Length: 224
Length: 224
DNA sequence: TCTACCACACTACCATACAAGTATGCTAGT
DNA sequence: ACTAGCATACTTGTATGGTAGTGTGGTAGA
Image 1 (cartoon, rainbow over the protein chains, first blue to last red):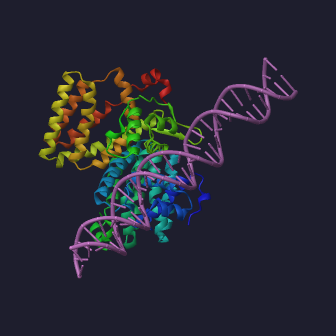
Image 2 (cartoon, helix red, strand yellow):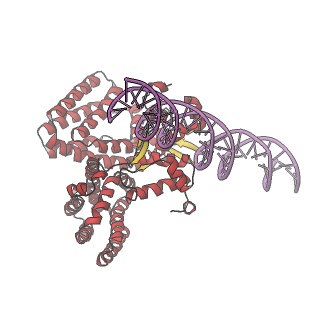
Image 3 (cartoon, rainbow over the protein chains, first blue to last red):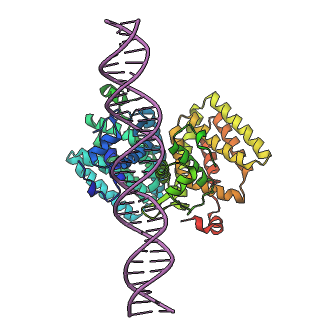
């Protein structure tokens, strides 16, 4: 169990972060019933901050609250996943094109450093680290183009596909290709080749279209 | 004052909607200090739903809460405005291109009906109605392409530019051009001309770049 | 007159009590 | 045996009391 005192922020944030992670890690699978009281006791806080965390999770569409009935971890909604993918593609195309124009030397170095770590993780078959580095790579793109809020919004909407991704990770994922694509993207930015960069990122995000049918069959209760 | 009983939803939603509208209408100008207790008394509800509404407003970046100090209507952040514009442009380009492929007859009719009302409002110089119809027009585009969540996210991020827009409305705005552009966009969708449609929407959203310098000078306290 | 300090009023944060709606299982009546 | 209806144990929604941190103005001392 996480320790509350480790969090510099409020009790509310502590509860929110804890629950959000549990949901995203599928430790709390879609459909699970959780109650304010139960969580409050578990984390040894009062109901108020728990309730406030629930509210934020509801905003994130990670929780479904039915008044006077109960709260449930949101089922994965494939329409939601598709819309998030759509918005992310549009946003990242814009970002990478912008990156070709404005990316600084400093940010490029960060990107290359990240790439180096990706290769290392790939060679060591360290999938969890790759997962984190992948996210970080895209975040760096947003940061270097001064679009951090856009990144945040995308991330917030990406929750359902994230869980799908976690599910599919249990099966298999082509990490080789992912790293190669990242490398090609960095090259394109260096060459300031917008068309190439756009093509690459579109191809890259297409990797995120999983075999939804197979997943649905394996985890029928997790989908709406 | 709004009447609570008119709201079908919870007290929390009542408070949230009330405050949000007040903020967006600049009835509560940027920088205004508001306290939980004060609002609770004003709306004759307890502090809990007010507090929960505050939380949601903070998520929307419409409110800045400083613990143990106070809560203030968020100042307009021009970086935020630019990022929202960026994301909106990327999203709407994707949507209108998609619209050229999949827009149904039914949705086209709704769009044309809306356009008709726009012309009427324009001829009557009814700016407020035009303001509403403009939003509705873009929402219809999202609805017809089945991207309602994307629209919702864009709207949520658009709060700062919305307020800027309200400010600039007091000055002047080229409503003629706006309606003409909308009309051209409908034509492009009918002709399934993606390139034309994209060009039009980009030009259209460029209208939203106001004379920020003038606004800052007129309302210096409203900006961060 | 100026400054340091302290009391006080104010804030948001958290804990807890109560209200109101819902699901469920037992019981009484058929 | 079966069903209608009620008691009960849940749930979330709302109200309120108490806590701790922050700003401010007044006062005592130099």
